[in-house]
Amino acid sequence: MHWLWRISEDVKIRPREHVRDDAGHGSSEITDKYIDIELRERHASSKNKKIDPDK
Image 1 (cartoon, rainbow, N blue to C red):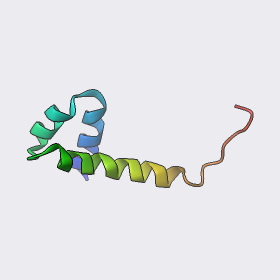
Image 2 (cartoon, rainbow, N blue to C red):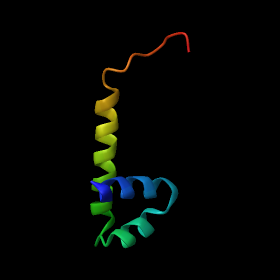
Image 3 (cartoon, rainbow, N blue to C red):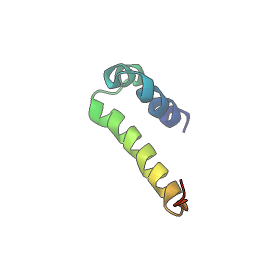
Image 4 (spheres, helix red, strand yellow):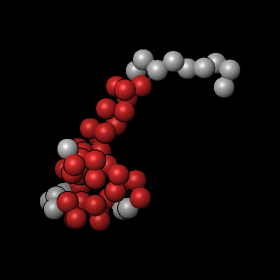
C-alpha cells in the first residue's frame, strides 16, 4: 500500500513520466492504474457525504 500512496501523491506534483520511471513501470498505463484506484477510493468515500446547501 505504501507504493500506491507514494505514486498517487507524487503524480500530484511531478510529471507522470517521472513518476512512471521512478516506480519502474514499463508504461504510463500501469502508473495510471494506481491513480485510477485513488480516484475510485476517493469517490467511494464521498458517496454518503452530506452537502451543505448554504455554502
